[in-house]
Length: 396
Image (cartoon, rainbow, N blue to C red; front, side):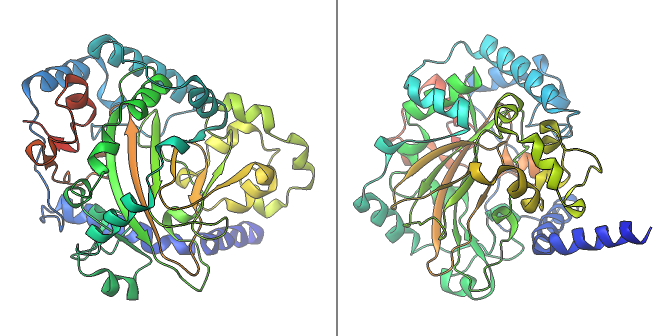
């Protein structure tokens, strides 16, 4: 009895840096339930063009509510990783049947690397220093939300310097982000969309666009998404990351545990023999750990950093480089951001899913999209773009 209580106390201490992260999410959800208006620009619901609306309605009929990431009934608590993969195959098949086959424009090497390891650098997509400078110059004139995502902020936006004094993260709302130079082009890049379409087996949906600062902190603590975790917003998710500041291995890198995105790949590297010297207080299962267990941890895998290091330390890849670096990962693979110690880290992400929207997953009001007229010089008005970008661009 005493040992069980001690384990629970150690667990609560282990997740102490997540407390504020969890509190802010809960607070924002409560505000939403009580019908308080969000602090960010929002839409009550997205109005789509007639063609895209027809596709969405067909998908709603073909895919059960609890299997659609854009529905409040979506069930993130799948029984097993095998069930998740089976559902993903079914849903991608339904999307492909309704939208048609996506044009394949991805390089075979990109796809193979993403399928095998769960991540892929897209070096030839890197932004130039001049392009990055123009983005940062634009952002320096914009207000910042004191949160790693604008729709989880519990305070109104203000200057970056003010936010930096008291918060580990700062972010921008979606309209501000897409209005930044070169961002619209990145959203509609046909090779990136083609790679994700090949990986998913169907046209993807952009579920969120985010641009945020991780401010340098001397205490070295990892907070929120700086702890290892999996993203479970949908049955298939990928994110394209673009570094907008220089990063180093221990200074703002993206850390990804290779081959943890699928059970098939994890089985190839899982060292079962390391159970022999696994400390009892690191083992939440009270038996020998098997690969399937790493997909069943509570809190989406948050707070089990020591367990991951014990079994998979040599597969932890630090992805870093000069500003402008572009990277794509399968978010279901275990990952985290390395906290910057000396220099603030600025990163843009574009997340893709089968059907999900980030705000719907969070059960808050959707962020206001940007009107197509404002970015028409950078994004083609095509059937594919209207579908893929429907949650970030208002084509109606």
